[in-house]
Image (cartoon, rainbow, N blue to C red; front, side, top):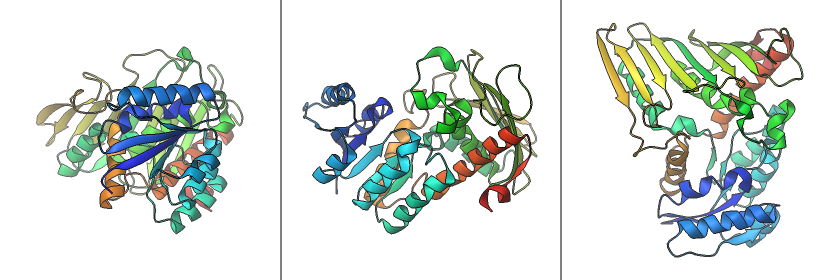
Amino acid sequence: MESIKYAIVGLNHGKGHIPAILANPGRKVVAVCDKDKSMIETAAKLVREKTSSGNEVKQFFSIDELLDWGMFDAAVIAVPPKLHSELAVKALNAGKHVLLEKPITNTLEEAEPLREACRKSKAVFQVGYEVRSSQLVSKTMEVINSGKIGDVVFVWWHMFLDYSEHERPYWQTVRKLGGGKLQDCCPHYIDVISIFAGAPFYRITAYGTAKGKKGPNPEDMAEVAAVMFEYENGVKGNLNMSQITPANPNSLFGVAGTRGIIYGDPWLPEGAGSLDCYTEGCLYRERITISGSMASRGHLGFVEQHDAFMKSILEGAKVVCSFDDAYEILLMSQAIDRSVSTGETVLRSDITG
């Protein structure tokens, strides 16, 4: 196989994958699938505009019709999370490589049929936690692995933004469906700081309520939240979030070690992020800027995740975010939601049994 033929399923978010797929001439979009005809027509038009030959794209209203046709190699599945397991299992069982949008599923129970399908399939299965594929994360890990900041002892991510600035799909406004920034967006950063920490989580304590509220919150979406992590290797961490605070920049992160510290900005100055590193006992200061013309801007790692997916399919490279990787993030998300609901610290063993 010298090129990969893609089908995109779910076009409200899925159409955003089209430019990333077509950024490499070895990738082609040959089919789009959605229940909304206008979404299909918009996506098909975008493919034609992005393709020099202006090739036509097959259009389908269901994944069953798409799989019956079958003339593609890989599916990007970008539907609401409650449908992830059902559709991904169908695609894997049909022998198709799958790039599934995150989260892997809404619940641990929903993930089990998908786990079994991944076990049986020879196809590549990757989950769209794209930030871990970004140049910013790679460069941060390069500094950590160099030993210049010593042993990591603390990690953090802060995100403050106005979530009401755009109209959202219904599922993104309902907590039990995975809505709200704490469940919909923050898992990217929970994932990243766990990579920086270098170990699975041991216990989590989380507080999340509407503005001005306090105490356990079993039902409502968290507008403001604070999450504390302790990892199996003793590293500590936190994530702080407000989805009702307009801010620019809206995210900052960091890694503290025994011999130095990294302060990170995922946006400035060129849209692809930068690091301010104090190393070797803070004797040296190094400023690292990721080029906005050479890396994914804004949506960090979005193109790079497709490059990794392609490499796994064509070269057998290790999958950048596997089922197990994404399941670990789901475990953390479930622990956070339980702690928000009860006000109690949640151990890993409380979730895994």
